[in-house]
Length: 91
Picture 1: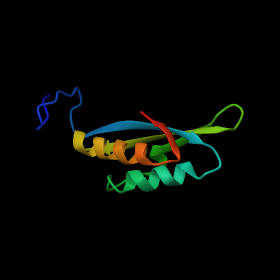
Picture 2: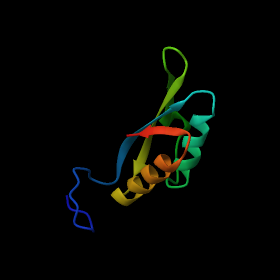
Picture 3: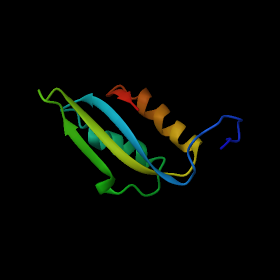
Picture 4: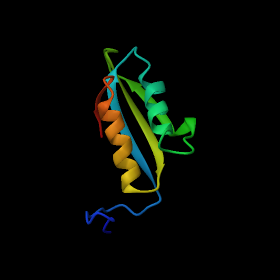
């Protein structure tokens, strides 16, 4: 599939797309991730967001399965997540 800007993508929209975020635990990362994604997704179910703490409790990983409608929407979510100081990595 080719996007409006000429880039190729393997995704067919709309689709459910998992976004994974990692950061330090104890800073409310889950709520922050939900807040950021909710600015770009009209309906984000609380069941669509799961979290897992690292073995030693220093880090937390968040997985949010979002109803993606376009590559632009996903790009905007990733830009905002990676600009957030609390986020170490978003994939």
